[in-house]
Length: 94
Image (cartoon, rainbow, N blue to C red):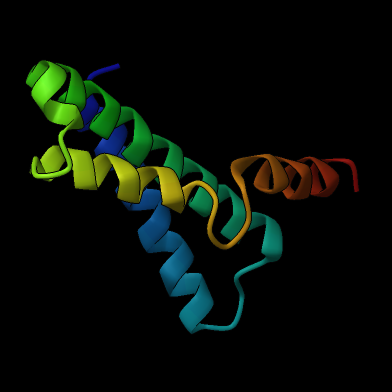
């Protein structure tokens, strides 16, 4: 699937989750799904972008290097992707 389609799909899902949160209807498993989808997609996109910069992409002075570090942290902060998968799987078994 192309990046534009994946990003649009993720944005749509996150938007729905924000509306549910504003109405007090967002469940923990929906929030976990939104975080998992958004942060994994962010990491995938930034990883591909980093490849275009080659070795210079790993220099801290490079903007893509900082974005790569930020994307990596997002997969950890607020619960790792593995924990998000646990939350989602528990909800599926109810």
